[in-house]
Image (cartoon, rainbow, N blue to C red; front, side, top):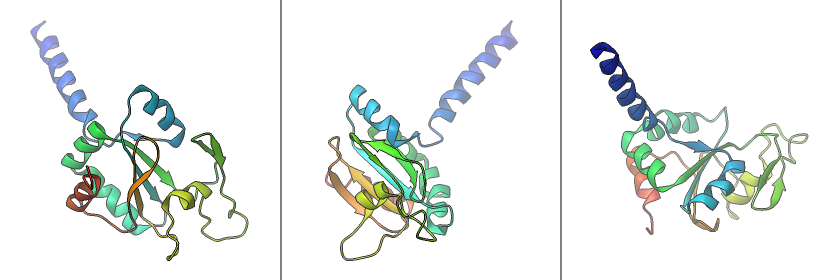
Length: 157
């Protein structure tokens, strides 16, 4: 009986530790429902499978315990492959990847809308911070270390 109690206690502790060991990534389709339950700012992470710096951020910055805890506590966090061919419904509109037939690395319409700059080409990784009304607060178009990501998410807060 005592062994079962110890096993249950260890299982409970490991489960709660595991819950904070990864970022709680959402899809765009989950975002609006989540915001209806509780309003929080939103961090968007646009990546591509071929992007070495995107992978490096996933392995380093997004695995940092302090980053994970702050993101999970204070933000909704969405990760999106910028080259996905799936239609995405967000904020009452449906977005598509219209470049899939004409470009080698086609960029999804939603990624371009939220993570483009007028004076430079679209680049990855792209990290975008939105308020609860989907207004852009801050954007970065480069690899960020854990400490740089924490500074970025605390910008104007």
